[in-house]
Length: 189
Image: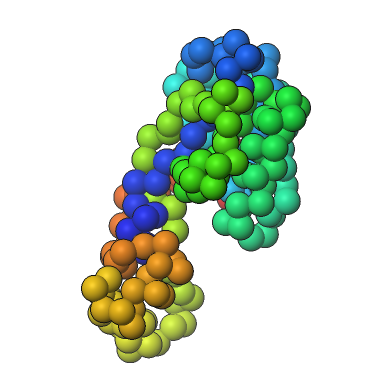
């Protein structure tokens, strides 16, 4: 898995003029969320909000299912969430940390219009997986190739940069416990 996908977080962002100062203030407000298969912009933010005491059934959801089938990873639905906030169609929204940071760095977040209310607990975001029919020697060769990449090697650095990471790390099943629980609670399997 990518080092940038360990201990990933999502942000609940709000319009400062919406009167949302605490998580329970989200009730009776409109929360823009990403694609229904987006862990960072929908599934886990809603799961974590529920476990933080928010009655999610009392929150009006404005979903953007623009990335369905792409596992929410294109970020398109998260950009729609931010647009809904800017345009006043929603008072709050859920986006992944990387989209939030990227949009800030690009100057597309006006801090007088949108601010972070809350950051979710950490979760692991992505890892490679394969069918059980993959021959062990193929899997081992792939693993060796990834773990041989070094940031200080110019031949590897560009590939690592394109993936948004500095090193490959072994996956850890425990980093997906919250996602499993969310899928169980939301009948998402």
